[in-house]
Amino acid sequence: MITPEDVYAAKEKAHTEDGGFYRWLGASLIGHPCSRYVALKFRCAFHDQFSGQLLRIFEVGHDAEDRIIRDMHATGKVYIGDQQKMIDLPGAKGHAGVTLDGIAMVDSERMVWECKTANDDTFKKFEKQGVKAAKPQYYAQVQVGMMLTNLKNALHTTENKNTSALRFEVIPYNHEVAENLASLARRIVEGFEGQRCNDRPDWYECKWCPANKMCHGSAIPRKHCLTCCHSTAVDGGKWACRIFGDAVIPDENLPVGCDDHLYLPWMLNFYMRGYGEYWVEYELPGGERFYNLPVSSFPKITGVDNPVLLTSEMMEQAGDVTRITAEGKA
Image 1 (cartoon, one colour):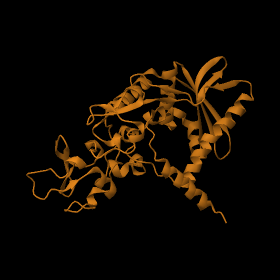
Image 2 (tube, helix red, strand yellow):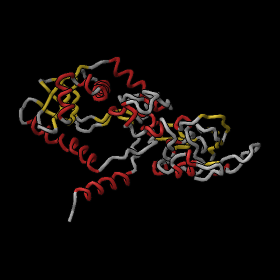
Image 3 (spheres, helix red, strand yellow):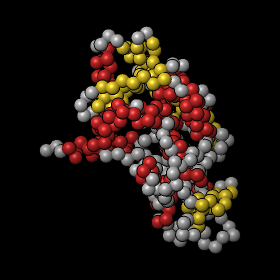
Image 4 (cartoon, helix red, strand yellow):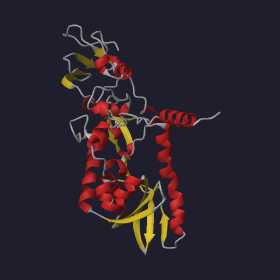
């Protein structure tokens, strides 16, 4: 007999197999309160792990859009077009931009349309505070959308998941906010590592963050081209590798990486003691040291007694470098 747990497990399995290698820095991510999270997420350093039940909740929001559009069209007062249209952010080399829920024609005015679903508590916050105060990330999302469509207003639609009540809010364009967000996106594409929103791992915005153990602890990022210090974002939404003469990396190779992989030092929450052309030396909180180096240079560190030599693959397999013994084994 089927159980709810069977459904949840199937959802979780499909989500894991998907791999979470989505390289687009969308407007919904740019406005996140922590720019370090944005930088890690853009480079696919981690794969969000969600319960099957939560994944189904996410789908409720996506599935609601067509129904809400149908209900709005029935009034004869609104028309929604250009659904899921992607627009590149100028200067971001095809790596960032916005995916519109749609463009709304309201009273002969074209507006960015953004549609969300919310639980009862969040819906009431929207009613009391407005989108800007209640959900700054949603506010940021429509600002980028308005900048890239050259529209002066956005229609933000919210459906209460508990009661099916609808709420509409017209949000005006704020040029300064939009330009700051666009500037941040361009910097992250160029390699900016972002800045923690707080240095306390138990801070309310950090406590439940999926990047917490990586940002504040000793967890290891995923090993692939985007977490490697040799890769650079280039035009057309592509990536190039310095090891191979700045050649463009085939898309199918990006999630895999190669034996020359070296982690970007800012992704590892360890003190960097030194580096060379093909190695980086780190010190763990307890004083232990290790070298991250590629397979092609392994082992070539000289002048150090019993060095702990770790390829990126060894580090990824260990998951947490503090588990690695003095012999360099996980």
